Length: 540
Image (cartoon, rainbow, N blue to C red; front, side, top):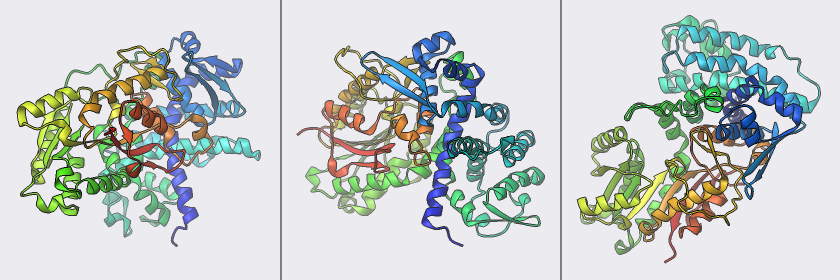
């Protein structure tokens, strides 16, 4: 029986609530263990700076953690940017929610325990722990479900958090491992067809059957329509799950050494994120945004030749996939694509990471795409412009500059010039190596960053996909409709700076780069937007 539109909306809400759980469970439990939640209930409110002093916490990450609870509706916050203060207050949900936070213990300990094992394989020891969690979950963790709708809503919220953190990593591992291949999705199968430890794997499948994803007959399983819905959206879990290395270290990040995930030698793998998983999850999630990018690219490269960019430069090119995609769009769907022999595209992939450069170069060569792949720093467009001019005889401003989800992930640089009159309207929580960054400085730093790029993108614009935050009270009022809580946690704890959509656009305009209204989109197209596509153009 096919899923109805309301069925799909409910399942989509479950995905968002699962992502909430992956972020919220370790955050809330870290605060519970150290007594912060008890302190808040006792006193009713606390200034984050004073709270950090009382608990010897790193104020920046403590602020991120408390804002996560606000986004779940368990605290209220007052952000006073004029005086650089943040006040947190308990509300009518706090006591009920905080009283349930001990239920997160099992899944949080599983996160910590699983870090000892292979990050792609299903191994017996974590399986055993997971099975115990499944049994407890099926019994609602022993809690008596209330008939009071307000209390029951919070109980269901916490249980859905536990469900999400219990199954989210498995969904991603299955997706990356090929479990959601049409071979399995279109026919019945047995556990041993996918995993050598059939006995252990059978327990995961049994729990998914309990959730309604599979039908089980004897020793064989078959996807239900519900299971197929989640299987086709497995990548939606990828980005959040990729930050589990950060979540399993929250106790240390908030209350101990804030640089524990950053003290790595040059060239060593990142400790805060599973980058391969992150790229896999991003690839599945970004298809919708790329369609909007395609519209802009097609418009630009269908114009008269003298009005077209000479090529493309992708700052933060990663594995080269985005540059390859844009080239194929131009080649197959534009006027310029019909004239590439006479008017070839000058393609540049730039990245700070040497591994990314090697991978990008190999992938573009394999795709038979001619491109220059060079080192570049998003914070130093002047160096990129110099290298392009000196080495290849082309001006950066003659190219269309593009990038995806990069500006918020630039290395932190404090504003060089003090701006006492700047009072931010952002509600975000920002940190660098545990220290809290004022929202005024977060805005000023973005302005400084975009002003550096402004001279080089006046001619053809800066085409960007960017991530954003949402005021926590708005997120809390729309649980199940947004991944904002997960984004705030993953990016806040890893020193990334996502501002609200309207504030990002205001800062861009202040830097002389106004969003082109014909090529602006946000997702979702509402005040819950966490992603925007923008062609930022100079006033000419």
